[in-house]
Image (cartoon, rainbow over all chains, first blue to last red; front, side, top):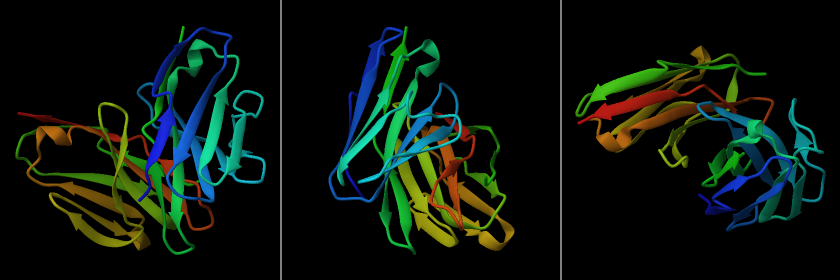
Length: 116
Length: 109
């Protein structure tokens, strides 16, 4: 498995501001992912972040709203830009461990964001 | 993309009861995972089970890949089993996990 930490664990922000969430893993990993979980809902993939390349965004998510950095194989950041109350969610990062045969994902503890 | 359906959406159990949660998926998969989300939002890995049967304590899981479903069994349920159980799959030509809507389990003392 992997030990994954996220900062901050929670935050309350004003609309129109931006928040950067950090994700740190205790081993080098190729694949890192960012998910959003809106209140009472399931998890939705925002983007895949690979080191050395631009993040790949899922339908409905754009780089201007959710810029992602992946400076090395143990760290990534997700920024939620120009926030509105609709951005209030839990944001989770995950990593994939394994090879072409075994590929299990492990999740960080999440960042609970409230936008007023 | 691949579709994931979980049933039932909600389950209320008396402590000590057994239960079965189901996950149906629409395509062949190379990854199927069961998670438990606790009240603090943390996703706990229960099983990585794209096929076959596994057991871990009071929990067990079976995936029948040819029939595109997986079952999670909870035996002798405890109040600490309460939370949301998610099934997530990745299709055979992809690495991205798609999550089901979850089953909310409430175990009453």
